[in-house]
Length: 477
Image (cartoon, rainbow, N blue to C red):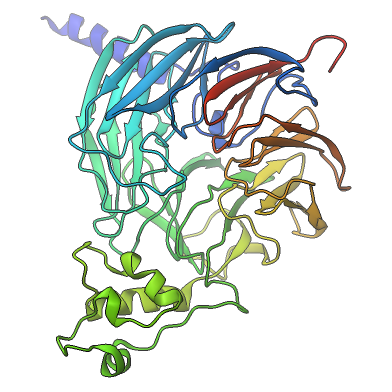
């Protein structure tokens, strides 16, 4: 091939890689930019008999639906296969399904599924990440592009963090009990571009945020005890904040020039902190066979023994002094809070760039939402809070939404309303504003873990057994 043909080929490839998805797309977890902002005029009231456009059966999986032009994509676990399914957005008709076969399915939490990470799409390809397999890509017609197999992470509750696309890179967070790292693959062929080790991090289930501000981009990655920012082009660390929870389950967002993140886990509140004795003191009392390490039955009943498998980083059934002290340090440093962070930091910015902090009524998995100058959160049990985004002043806190369920899905802001999807399958709609106002409660009758997609007035909801599409009729909006 001559030089001119090579140049044209490279130009064509560059154009493909830089094509953006359309405004009507919901191309990744929490939609465009990962900010959970819907478009159009979605219905306030909806359910099996109200404003239902269509409903189809789905195999089990916890990934959220993405909208890819005239297509919808989800993943699912079918037997021992990890399956990607593509549907026509207008009526839910299945267009194609493709499967990969891992050597073995990774262990998952009882509420989770090996198909939990949400795919991400660009103009031409959808990228599917499974912890048990790695990455596989498909074009709009279901033709496989490339695959990049990866070893399953060493973690007992499975993989949940979704991939993100940045320019020509696909970036994965692979935090685990041992061997945590970030991995950037070239979107065109799956080759590795960079890998950044994160040895101080343990299991994490939070999807990173690409924070664009002041002409720069940062990859903001939650993790155990620390929140860190990286250069997405190279994987080099920009800054770090300490004092977040032991396990990252909630994803960040941004607005009004600030970054917002929330973290909560057992043992991190000041009035409910879990503490551990030094290994030497503990071994003197409980190391029954004197071998300088613990088996689970050597530990007394209580919150520390309950977390034996979390301390046992390499899963060999033994907790060494090093593993014990690692967990002890994590409990000592852990903090639970909603944080607002100013841009422009370098190094440790724990005190220098903190705009405000809230420590009451904290969400566990449901991510914070920035919408119309406010930050919204939902605590398990159905307790809603709303803060002024710039100052952190609460407009309201601990307001009961009338659904006493856990909330794993992230909230969506659209058309002056906030949509919260509860585990029990009820979607609560609040009016956006300084005053707490429940507009509707919409029960679907099935468990719900996936975050909704709201595009051009349509609401897509994935429940335990179905994918639902809702749209207002002219007389019911």
